[in-house]
Length: 86
Length: 415
Picture 1 (cartoon, one colour):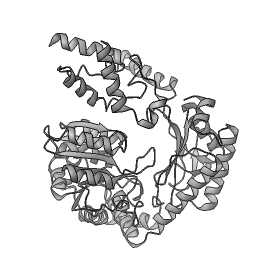
Picture 2: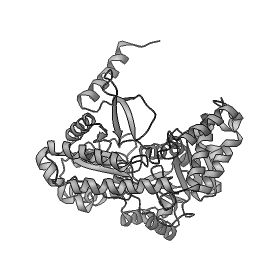
Picture 3: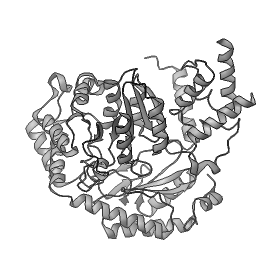
Picture 4: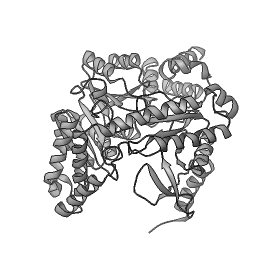
């Protein structure tokens, strides 16, 4: 789980946080991503694609909701669910 | 007629939630034509107050220009009030095509198609030309109408960090297997007032064989030496494949928008773009007024030159007074306050001082980046802007923010 957590956190840092803002953003597995504005719901598509590719899963659009993507913890739950179902 | 208690209470709940979060929008009633100085009733029921308008998109001061009004009158007299038809049935007059040709010439493109608004142009263009085998790669701060247009289109979409060319290039690489790749950007970003680095975007597009889409709504008429837009500013006229822009801002401010660009793209919009196919033609008086606007702008750069001078004066004045502003080359000058409540309080205090501005906060701008967006017009004059600066200084002093940087304001008020 720690590996997955770290992998997702690293991706979010690289993909969504500007270098000049990196010091101002506290990011851990419980940080609100969508509702805090770190990731906007329109741009979370690349995170979805990253998860699908990295973990060889397919997340239906109906499951890729802003709520499901609102923290790394809930994203991990989603990935695990689809890995099990695969 | 099943307006049930369930329906009523569901919507009332949502309205209440908007009110309690401070997100409820209220209109202010203007009792005069759109101009740099207007008479505003706010709150509703209060006697109208004369204020300096620093929040309209009337960049060139043409919304109430006598020549434009006269041309619109002539259009009304000679071509009527409305078309009662979409364009392709019986809604196209000679002046619609004349306006499309004039816009093509002004923007330096191959062809143009009018839409009822630029919101409609952005809503219709992607779906009309792209399919599931294509990808749209947009800057993360593009206008909401582009987001809607992208959502309506079946092509894949992705985003890049605002104006980050390295990130854009990564995305172009990532999606190199797609048939068409379209880079999508605003020309001037409406909340920050900065310009997209269009020269570098075009260079990347050329290197990777991608198309470039530009929404130049906050630029057409005044950015660039002769006001053609951000593509003129960066010396890439003729290299933009799709330009969308509006008649609802600098170009007279009434309504209407267009898609201008490669001939085949425009032609596909005429065949497939749903807002073009299923909503009425731009009304004749507006088409006639817009033709006059383009005639004015093609004969002189006086208005865009004055706007540029006003913006320079305003930026310098705010900076020297100790406000934090977003740097840029446009007449959109955001005064950064970071805290949402502070932005509302300052906008209210400024209104009392005779200055009409609006505070913007999340979700309209990123969380913790609340601001007052000021917009200059060619109709402002220096004495007017000097009075507005004095009001800003007075209100800034009251709230103790002059001379504070971002960190200082956030320490004092939070974000």
